[in-house]
Image 1: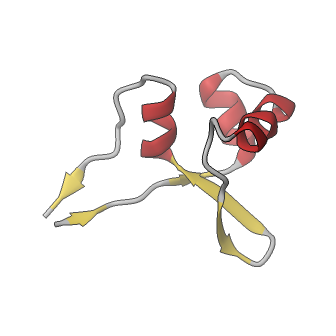
Image 2: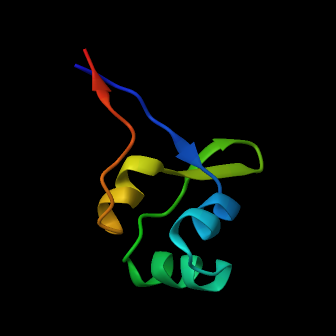
Length: 65
């Protein structure tokens, strides 16, 4: 089974979930949110499906075979 991953950047996390930059990183330090994944040099992001799960939102990301 293949899963499509959608990564979102810090700015998008703030906009989509309504939390501040400081809160985002506080949650990461506290272990509430997973650390972001390094996508390339200087760019990192979070798996949208994992964040949707954390915030109790039905993910728009679907699994495909």
